[in-house]
Every structure is written in structure tokens, then in C-alpha cells.
Length: 486
Image (cartoon, rainbow, N blue to C red; front, side, top):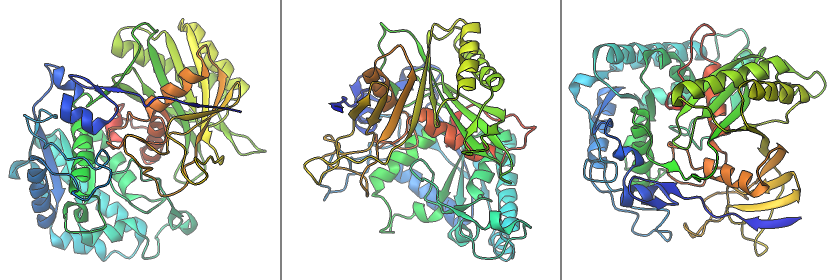
């Protein structure tokens, strides 16, 4: 066993490099501020009751100005000041919200939903209500992104099971599922008939991304929330990306190396749990230009119950992805890196190789990325540093994407960090390069400006995609941009 430490990957902004998204935006401005086609005024549509709309307006006004950091913070690089969302700060843009682009939900409508006895019916009616208002804004007003404010009186009625379900399969509709909320709009306990996912899937056809936020989160008086500056960082950055702007930051790449297309493949289960499908998240290039694809129903091993694609399905999926890459960038990638959340089967490898050969892809890497129960300690009691790589053997490595961070002067997690197990099935690149790329891809998440995400965006994105796609009708073509799923 050998131990190495990878450097924290740098990100590129408009005028410089930095490892931290917050410091980079503050000092060097968002990367796409260099683009002439970029808009400086972002139209924010909103749906909510009168109180929620007032709070959103007040919150955006607060965000337009500098918000100081926590004065008592012992980690100043973790709790940084927010520079203000305006044309003179690092974002180089401003939000526009006025009465012409908001839709108010009445208290009587909220009471009507609250009085519905059955859980699934209550969620469906709430989704219909928000969809109706979002449809009006998308079709009749100029909006770039729509904020859906969930009033406190509705929140508990659609995010927590309180009454019996109308569904015949009550075991499914009442079963609680704990969701990793690392990238979510809000911290929500969910069930299979999930309000957040169902609403995102329903409004997808409108061509306007939405941001779901709880009214409670717009009131800074609550002590159980993040400090205002941190909240502003995450909220404004996510809204900025969802509004259709390109990207706030991009990965650093080596101009002397071949162009790379990174792809993540994971599987998701249908709502009735009878069908497994493939979801694919493709990152076109270091700019984060990407593509979402939905695969066909797949097989499940009768012995170990693990899902897998046939050779034909694997070949078709990769061919579709590379053709989309070509159409978007007018060129072909020299190298394709495939991250999969399960082991590759021989039939999958054969299909993927066949597609790569057909499309004249010079190099293709197959990398399995899974969770590991392995634990390391530094000095007996401290977590290892983020970026620690442990070589188990030539093709098996552990990578700590969560851990102590010198820049933050702390470990930000609550529990002992778990590394990712990296299994290199086939690659022309060194293990160090493979792991460094994965570490960089953990920072390509525009829903969170704290840079120690656990999963590379390839797999984090494909999982989020699968959560939403299960609510999308089979005959509806999914939106290809990740902003509709985050």
C-alpha cells in the first residue's frame, strides 16, 4: 500500500486562477463575463404566496449588496464575505424581479391543498398549481429562471408523510427515502412520490429551469440556517447558472494534452420499481457544456441483482453521446473517460469499445467509482487531507474527496470521511492523472460554492438526472442541460 497527496485543483475565472470558487469570483470575476453574448440583467420569475414573494424580493435586495462574513468565524476562508450580486462585483450581473414576472398563490388555494386527505393526491395538486403558474410565466413573460417559493404552511404537507396515501401500493408511496442533500435546493425528507422531483420533471417541457426554495430559508432570523453570506453564495451562484449563463468557473486543462470528454453512467429505478433505466450525464469539455441522455430499460442480474447494459445498449448510448458532442463542438474528442457507478461487465466493455472504434475515438478509459468503507486517520484522531490517494494495487485506488482542507483550516464534515474507491479497468493515463481528474470534477458543481464535493460531477449529475427522469413520461424528450435537474 502506497500513499500520495494530490494538489487541490485550480479553477479558471475571467482574470485569474484560484482553488476556491468564492475567492475566485470575488477577485477575478465569473469566467463567462469575458463572453460578449452574456446578459448582464437576469429576469427572475417567481411563484409563491404574498409573504413569500415579499421575502424573496427583500432577499434579492440584500444579495445585491455586500454581505460581511461571520465576524466570529475561526475559518475565514470557509466563511467568506459575499461581494454582492451586481454589475460591479465579481458576478458582473444583476437580478430583475418585479410584479410583472411574479405569480401569487392565494391562501385559499394553500388551505385547499392542506385539507386533502391523501398524500399522493395532495402532492399532485400542489405540483399542478405550481406548474400552471410557471406555464403562464414561461409562455407570457420574459423570464430566465423561475423561483418556486414553498410557503411554510405547505412545506410539511408535501415533504413529510402525515396522512395515508390514496395509492393502492401504500408500501411504495409511504416508504421514506433519505436523500443526499449535498446538491439540493433545500434539505428535504422525501418519499417515492416526491414533490421536488415531480415538479422539476413537470415543468421541464416549459424550457425554463426552476429553483425551489422554502419560505423559511428566505427569513434570516432562524438560527438553524447557514450564515447569510454563505447562503447568498450558494443561492446566487445556482440561480446564475440556471438562468442560462454559461459558467461561473471552469476546470484547468493542459493545452498540450488531447481534448477529453468525460461521461458518467448510473442507473435509476422507475417509480413502480419494476423497470431499471440508464441515465447518462456527459460533460462536453472543461467549460462544463454538457448533455443529458436517457437510456433504454436495462437488465438486472438474477443472482446479485446488479443492473447492467447489453453490448448493443452500451454501444448505442455512447454513440449517441459522442454524436451530440460532435454536433455541439464541431469536432470529435480525442479521449473519452467513462465513469460508472458499478463494475463494468464484459458485454458493456465490448459495446463501448465497438462504438469508440466506429467513431474513431483514439483513447477510451473505463473507470468504476464507488463508495468505500475504508477509513484512514491522521495523527490517530484527525481525518486525512482531501486529495489523499491510497494505492491498493496497480488498478485499485482510494481517493479522499472529503477530508481536512488546509485552505479552510478544518474538516467541514460531521462524520468520519469515506473515500471513493477508484477501479481502473482500462486506461492509457496514469492512476495519478485519473484521480486528479476526478478530484477536479468534484468542483464542477454550480449548486454549491464550497469546493469539497464528494462525487465527480459526472456521477453526481447522472444520479440527479435519474431522480428526475423517473417522473418524466417516456414519450417526453428530456432537457439536455443540467440546470433543469439540479
